[in-house]
Length: 457
Image 1: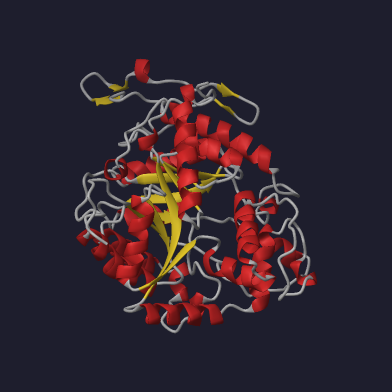
Image 2: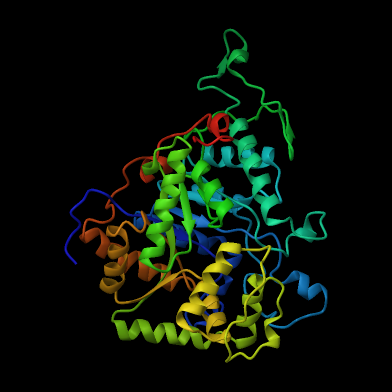
């Protein structure tokens, strides 16, 4: 394709789903599954991403061993899975801040099983440590295995999770506004440490939270950390439209992605926000080879490493409680009852199964391979061609690259695909600023909580 004719640049983040974003690829001969607990591997992945001038490292988080509920009942079907252990990201990211200078550092912290004051304090601290590179992925927990680790017998209902998340964000944002700029004086001569007139009590009393404040961390370099949001259900879209700077979504066609992007932008405008301030980044699973044939061979090898029972077990996470083992693997995916887990992801998977007439096992292997995200397989030029097509069609503002395993796919994407994008003028060759907000092209924010509860009519 020809070089880009616009100054608009892609935004690219590295999604580090450790030790593998693919159910079988951690078994590849050159994979390093020990990346899950070894800091030195995280450091190398961070430096690869920063050397490529990517916008951010993006960490998912999970606070339960996968399929804990089933294992507790003695059901070990498909239990030899991945990601039983990983480092806690908000402890890890300050360490990565010390070995990087420009790349953003974003992590998931669920609004379902956390408290607002703790989250406000941790991300404010990370923003100070990193000199303005923090990002918070504001989500509601979709993992039903987490509830029993937090004083509950059952997972919080989907609608209630989003109701709580909306209030959660308002409290956190209000706490971030505890201190005006310059309120901390530290004046030795007068003995005045802070200006009490520039300190604000929150005094929040709502349905879910009662928080007085103020926060005991000074105003951040970015005002607020960059807010990521990863929900694509109806309430998830609305939460994203009023709170998010970056929306991480799963879309597999240009038409659907463009409709999603337009929908979020229209909702944001109704909240009085500038739609251009929100960046929509679909997940992308790149499988890169020197040639298309080599890339396809890599993909086929990874697929061959996915055991059938593990693929079906993983799909059952979004099956609405339906036991998929009772259905023929070579038959169609049965109609799934509503789930209290990832509603939008379930709808996406069901739609793909019906449109492409996939068998249950084919659907399970697709979900195990990509978690429902877009997959691009080919040479660096071919992958860049597809990325450019999506970007120039208005389907996205960039991508969150999700990797099948570590480290080779990260090396291939950062050292082969990104230089091709840079050659076309689609991606930066140097960082534009010092903070994550500056590099993403989104303005510093404050006082969001004061306007968050009512959308413009």
